[in-house]
Image (cartoon, rainbow, N blue to C red):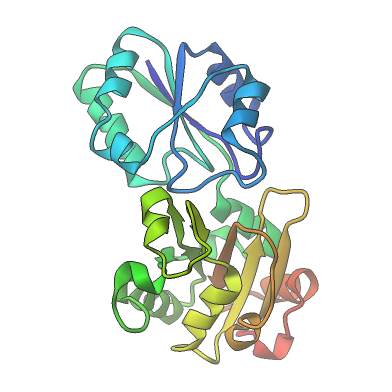
Length: 269
């Protein structure tokens, strides 16, 4: 069997009880942390807490060469670990489908996602979110300005009055070493001020909401115009941004109270 387990948002304790039991019972465990990672812990701490050795795979080892993972799952109980919820990325769906092609039984044990945590922390209603998008580092997409994947998603959601979650780019390993910043070694995380600055270049008048370190003991939520958010320091990653659409009165109240928004900047219907 191949069991996909979401580890939750922050550290080795963020996993569900069901996920913890399945991980500890597995014969072998693999993990990937290139789509996201747990900022509050490291692999060694995960292994110690769960008394389980964990083999971390890079993107190529999961997407192009997963043969040994699947071969192990044909004869053993294998756990495959990811931050957040395990099926958010198409990478994981592809691996599950490859397992099915080989007749391997699979199951999914969910974890908390950044998007559901964002709704909870901001007070924005979950059913009023549209399609999410990811804002890449400029060096990663190579185009001038914002990529169309971002602008089209934002504009389509706003046309329908919906909120947009903007995930901020993460680069791990060889991808991080492409960064023009000299201080980057193996990890680079786009911070909310950088993301706000990139968005403000094209949407200077829009309000944004920063969610920093969701799932940690000290999450931060802050709302303001994108130009203003670009000047602030939101501390350690992981960060994401929300661009609100039309707001229910209760949502507006929540952003004012929980995120320090200026009510005059909000679109209330």
